[in-house]
Image (cartoon, rainbow, N blue to C red; front, side, top):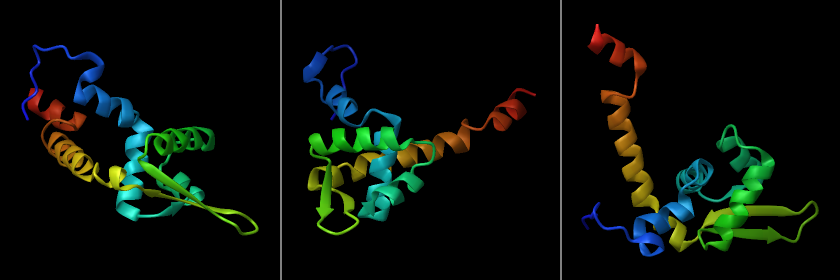
Length: 122
């Protein structure tokens, strides 16, 4: 698929819809964690996404569950145990995350390190 930069497609634009679903820094990192590690408990996710507050993690997981990307499973135990995993729709984002990782790696190798930019200009 080729994206036509000259065409403004508004809310019907597939790229815009994708960004609406996974466009936050935290959602992408949560997806990465669940994609790489599989089913995780809340505390495991919290440790796996450094810098996110518990409140923000809860908020993002609820949105992603509502969007059909994440499944929340509550076990009737004391204390209650809750696990999060990707739905089939969530797993379908793996190629997108892989492409982002590859692109980011190439960027960091070529121009993403400030010390490399300094050496090139010296």
